[in-house]
Image (tube, rainbow over all chains, first blue to last red; front, side, top):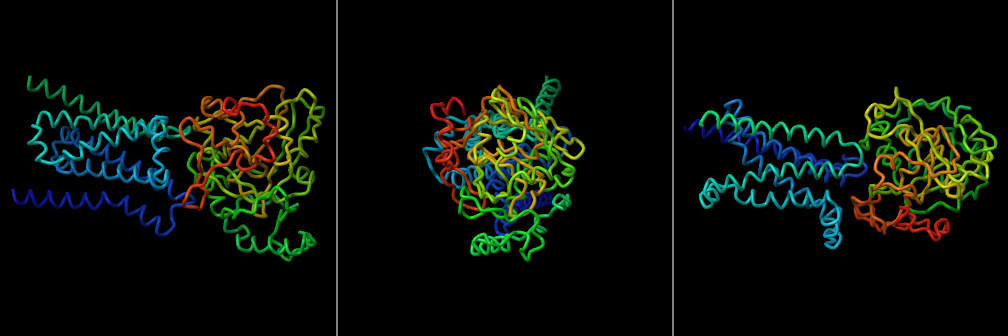
Length: 202
Length: 307
């Protein structure tokens, strides 16, 4: 029990530090002017990419646990989810600040007129309740069933986030397609594991 | 002629910006009395070029940024791809054929093209449809002097520009991102406008491949994608040509594509732009600030409809 706790704490610390590396990279890049001709664009897009990466990693935890029997994916799942929210927040701030300079009228127009902004903003808003209820107390308050129902919204967040990316690119959708493929694999893996579970129990 | 000898130029090999700027100042001081060939700088290959009244005096975008942040999808869709991969582009020998509704269809070699008119330095703003902009000192000559060589017929109303297609040197071609070869088009009066140039160089030297060597179109009042790179064919037509971006997404890219802050791209606003190298955004100007020169071309035209 104690050694398990120790191990899981070590793992969490490792994942926590590793998850800050992308942010560190962009901070370092800005400091050293190492991000090319349009650093703000690089940072904004990079933070969006890392939001997607963390969302997909979060979605991978449960199927990974199911198919391998490993327990570690579940230990870090919440942290990965919170980092997805963290990077989504930074991504949003770069847009509000460095892209729009807090021109709320323009931001409002963007949200209603541009589908890719609408999708991105919706993703962020849906992530808020998930982040807020990502603790043991919220599970107790909500009850496990309702909490689980709420947190299934992360699938929708995944879909909306990749949609946001797809609608943003100009012509070359090869990168968004990779994200769609991974998302499809992860979602169908969950579907399969569910069917299996019903077969075993029922 | 040693003009097009060097196939691969690193930005660092080109005249440094500081030297370049000094040279410009020096030339301006000597009031054009110094002839390029007599300059002590033996490195100068094309430049510095005759000064032009059309040039802006805004601060130049650094040579490094001009040559490392490019859209040239034949070499990949990332901004840094062209600088990395375009060195393979074969730019010698290079010919441009002029055909279609002309009295004298012709194919001209690069050497002859460069003799058509004295090279001028044109410092233009470049506004990309993506919302960023630069100020670039091009070296070029009015497109009109090239077009006149073929003696366009009275029935010619449009000019189509077809760019190089070298599948073996262009990794982007293998991926079906756009309909290759990349083509663009202008109305005849736009093509003949004195602001419209064919550029053979920038920053006083020959064009780096990633910027569209050896010869590219520059139409400063339109979004950057209208200014086709590495032009190989010019065709006069009586019908509006369908350009590559119009085929790719007709609702997003129109034939005119004039810079216009009031007409948004369907997916983003065009009201502002980020000048590369600057932190704050600036307001985008109608016709990219060239309204005095070009707005008469569009009298009575609904710029919203003909975007």
